[in-house]
Amino acid sequence: MVFDYCSITAATFNHERYFCTDEERAWLWNELLKELQVVGISIGSWVVLPNHYHLLVECRPLSIISQPLRRVHARTARELNQREGRPGRRVWHLFNDRQIRSERHYYTTLNYIHYNPTKHGYAQTPLAWTCSSLHWYQERLGFEWMRDLWKSHPVRDYGKGWDW
Image (tube, rainbow, N blue to C red; front, side, top):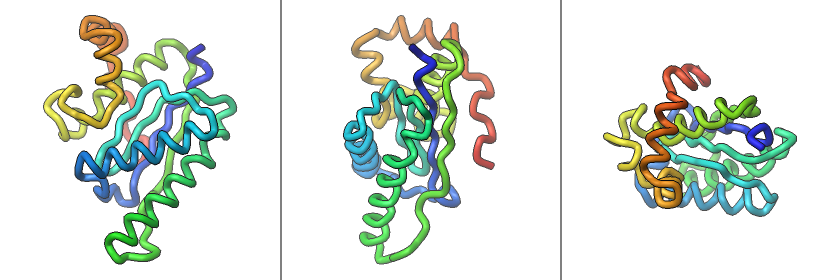
């Protein structure tokens, strides 16, 4: 049921770009995946960008997600700071969570997550961005399904100004 899902967005402090390469984004994604799997949280969709990420995860109650994210943020901040010789530097700013309220909210969120690299100018098209669940959806459900979903659940101004 879609009401058991929540949308998570986490941003780096001052929107600094710490995950600029495919390898760095894959590392963050693997850290998130590992931690969420340990606590049994299913992931509906995801994207990792240079300065933030979005997740659509199955979790009820919403509070279940905070501890795994804090652990990932602490580990990745320590590792980044160690690599760059900047102990104690603040890497993560905050994360926002929102319970999914309807089927329309679920699918619009899914589209928003996959469109995010294009929205921010990191990729010409969502398919050009490698660190995203979009490729999984395309392989399993096909391009036609995704195009129909985009038409039936457009993004418009979804997510505008959430952290400013």
